[in-house]
Image 1 (cartoon, rainbow, N blue to C red):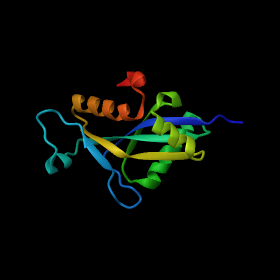
Image 2 (tube, rainbow, N blue to C red):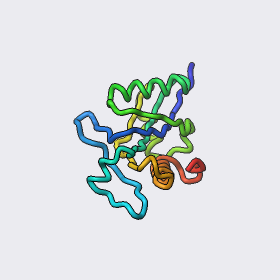
Image 3 (cartoon, helix red, strand yellow):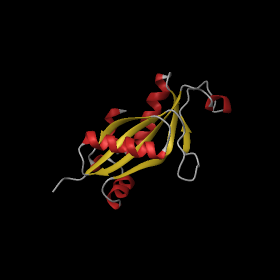
Length: 145
């Protein structure tokens, strides 16, 4: 019998994803002190968005990533870069563990909250990463921030 893997990925996309009903995901912007969140900022071509992707699967990591990207293509036209964060449930916060425990095998969940940042700003990208991983992982495991 194959093991079940509970994967947590950090996804990066070049736009705000929309859900099945066409509603944009919730966005929190990480901006440097001298910037304001405005319509002009939202049109910045350098904006990128981090999101959490959860997966319950019986396949290895390489095929798991392929499955997530395939699901994403069915879900959105936006590009998606994935970084595998962990497959240890003990490192994930309780609500994420419970979500994965309750779903069927071969399930991919794109969390509907994203963090926006300017990819040209090291400060913004670091803070955005820290913010979103802080939501998904226990603080004692946030060594990758």
